[in-house]
Length: 110
Image 1: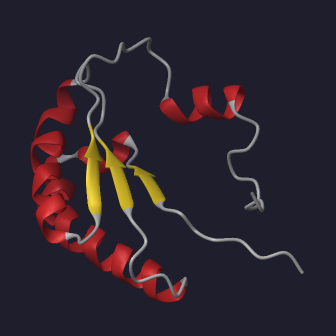
Image 2 (image 1 turned 30 degrees about the horizontal axis):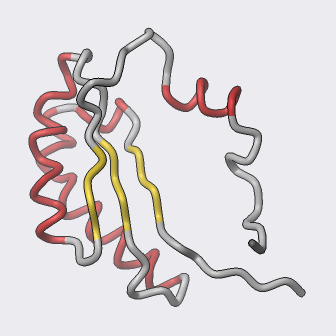
Image 3 (image 1 turned 180 degrees about the vertical axis):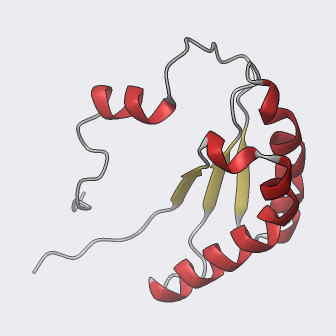
């Protein structure tokens, strides 16, 4: 059996999670999810990087404004900005799946 080491968690919330009602409860739900995930993976110190939504979408403003508070609340975390990224009208996930065959693949030893 191959073994692997989890180097980090990359989290990018979909736009459906950016409504005002969901933004209000997002920090508590995110913290609970990451805490549980780290526990389930037996990786309490694995870093977490989470990304902003596109600035080109008006409903992203409140969501993106809330994200820096998570860095203060989630140990070993960082925020990846979407500043300067161009919105080409495609969803991040569909673009990612077309361009990177490893998305969703099992971890590899390397």
